[in-house]
Amino acid sequence: MSKQLILAALCAAVVGALRAETVPIFTGNGYADMNHAYSGLSSVTLETWIKATAVPAVNTYGAIAGNGYLTSATGFGLFLHNNGTIVFQVRQGGTIAQPAAMYPFDDAWHHVAGVYDGNAAILYLDGGEVARVTQSVDFSSVTQVFGIGARCSGSWGFFFAGRVADVRVWNYARSGGEILMDMETRLTG
Image 1: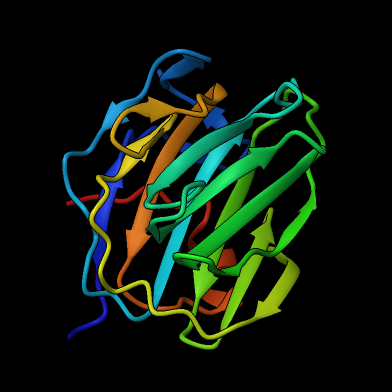
Image 2: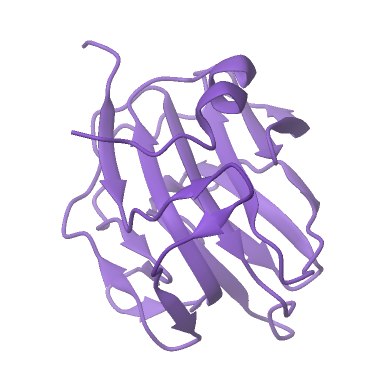
């Protein structure tokens, strides 16, 4: 399989001084159903820009983007935890790789990226690696649809509150250098 971008959604320019054009604002009860499960992947990169001000309520999470995560299903995704962290989760049922790091909740735009290379899950915040978990996970048989602003597990839940721009899914593990080099570049084509 060739290395390629397999999803670019909710695109807004976040270039230079993080100038954002019109972007979706998730108020804690909406989502974008991308109507596709990214099955058959052995590695993945999921990246986006987010702007959030509030830590999710106790006993809940803010699902940013992904499929088959925050359940007992198989998949990957980015979310805000109610303990104040940003998390990238890759899972195969009960086997989970879940690097996490504190998120600033400062009403500023932040680039977040999760990478799974077949051996480790790596979390990047604003272009720098902030956490890594080594764990072998086979998430190739994803059945849940990809969502932005919530996660689907038969029904939609764990709604995100904030802004999301430029969600990108790549079918390979991008390097830290690739993420840093392209994070402020608007995709075209």
